[in-house]
Length: 327
View 1 (cartoon, rainbow, N blue to C red):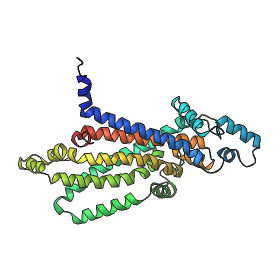
View 2: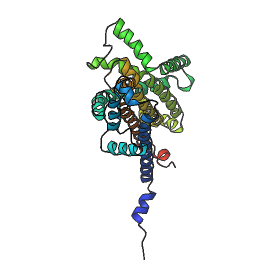
View 3: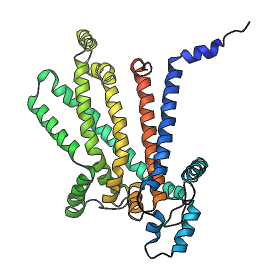
View 4: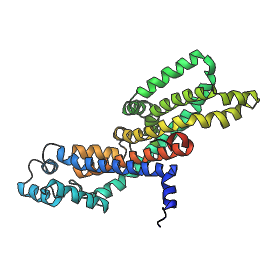
């Protein structure tokens, strides 16, 4: 008589285990698509990247030797296999221009980009949550029409302004005209202000609007009316009952905005000559240094996937009924 493996069967029925398996499966598939896309990028771009990197006057023998050393003359599937094998062993290739390992270039530049994105994200949240909360309180129940109109109009305009355009305006006002802040480089704490503000203003405007709308919705719920009927202090109603229920959608959008912040660093870093991955990928594209471009695209893609995974896990912890039980 054979007994069923009850512990394993019970584990398979556990909602958290099914959630972890679903998310892990999606992450693996997404990473595979990302790796394959970054590999195909160098083969889909017209022209010879080696010739483009070495220049039109480079000897043909040097170009052939370079193509052979990079394995570009091998069959495509063989190149793909070598790419995967080297990638999982930590080898992301060698720069065609500097002859330095791509992983070394990325490890030198990545901290500056991460700093910029994280500081901008924190600033956006610090501005958006209190501002959205205050606007919801001031405009609750149809009050403060002029305040609502001013807030909505201003936030729409700020959210629509591109990061690099705002960066140029900030450089002109605070760097060139007033001379208060450095206009380029990563020279000290004050050099972070303008690029961080450029990245944070748009997401802060969007998050503040979402926060206001979510809080207005929560303030009209029955449990808030019950809390008021019990004559609880207003600060307890907002802090304990309203804000925790309004923050879920805000966090979802904040996670997505963090992904866009990482991508937005590409343009902002070039405006402020910031020594991060954004300025490196632009210079590598111009120099047609495709191994470096390939590696940086892979790092940006992995960053976005990991941020989305972290948002999914956080939402599952905050609201298990909607996230854990989804099919």
